[in-house]
Image 1 (cartoon, rainbow, N blue to C red):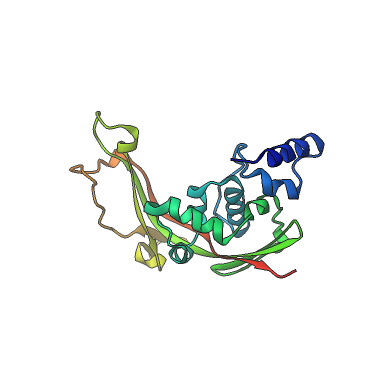
Image 2: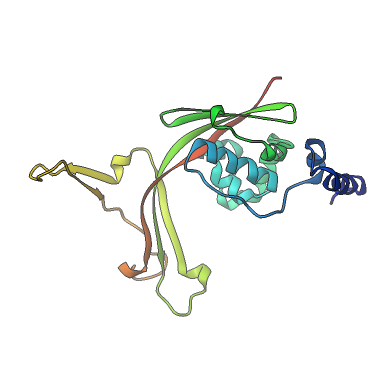
Length: 220
């Protein structure tokens, strides 16, 4: 619970020019509407992480972290709340950085690795990111008596190489340069149903996402 002094500080700051950097550290997480959640580029992934930290959104933070950083923090979906405490302890007051701009010039990408530098409230933070590859299947379990939570199924896994599930062959006999792109078959657990009707498949594919590998506060 916020102290009376902190609450008063927030109220005063809003009546002036909006929350300043100092008052934000006391006001706690922002509860206004989300702007975006996007991991498609290093810049957008960094913005997503910072906004999630600022708003105290553990599920979004978890999704933005790389597998390696999740392991270092002891974070998985089953212990998300415990991991969230570890994240906040490791990066105190980092939610203030959510108000910082992430200019395109601060992004340096090298293949599947990138670095984003963010300056805020007299501090500098370096966010190291990696691009990870996944395959995913989303489908609806058949059954009229299922609740929405029971009906919607999602399975998938991280890939080390795209070639694990993607096959590209050149069509040598084609009249123009053409290649045939296909997904290799993979076994999928049915999760309590006899079969997956093809018409119940909402998504099947491969995607890539930028995830945060490390966050470092730089010396001034």
